[in-house]
Length: 307
Ligand SMILES: [Zn+2]
Image 1 (cartoon, rainbow, N blue to C red):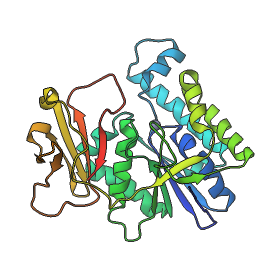
Image 2 (spheres, protein in one colour; image 1 turned 90 degrees about the vertical axis):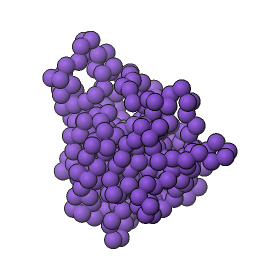
Image 3 (spheres, protein in one colour; image 1 turned 135 degrees about the horizontal axis):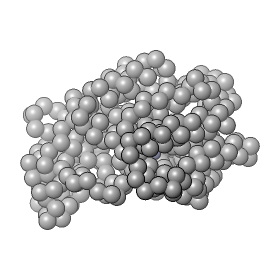
Image 4 (tube, rainbow, N blue to C red; image 1 turned 30 degrees about the horizontal axis):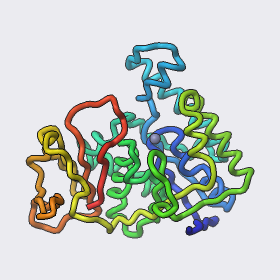
């Protein structure tokens, strides 16, 4: 276990795909940075507006049209303002991008350079010393894609800040997340109060969220140089024609049908990615195996892998 030290020089940028991720993932660290005299900025990628089941439950309606979805986003934006106020973060530190909830992977695929530029603009303006972003293997697709985007955005910075990844959906054991932020009881209580401000989320998922917010926070240092061209997946061949392989690097994003993707199969059955241009693969590089059809299941089955 490694503690994380903060000081008056710490400039912490928290990247949250949705309202409440900042509190679940970093609510203690945020308080400790502020207590040490450091600075905090929250980059909120979406307003969490694509959240139909809690909305149906709370608003007692079945059909969620565009106006209803927009209204929900406004409500969740207000909740995150109240939540960060509990953590001591001023409203001026919130920087919302208003991207489409459940749409970060497609945004990355369709406008990789524009998306990276939006993150880079924040980095240049705020000059963080530490960035906390979601984990690459978080099962929510917006979270994995946010990690990829942050890593890509950092790739051309002359003195890159420390990139830490926090878990929300998925396993969070100490072996994978060895950096711990432990807090005094009053900080833990403020984190709980901040979480309770997310009333739209507490209605259906309160128990899960309270469990996630208990105890110390865990982080891993993102190693943007790490990677393996051998892919971890052996998808069933019956799915072959519906599968796609997306690869994201600082040079852009490509999304092939699995059967057309530049991969070779090793004698042991492992698939290996082969960068098609003949040049070295630009780093960092990430691959995602995904299905080509829409599904009501929001979580990733295969997710991302660092190449
Ligand atoms: Zn989230």
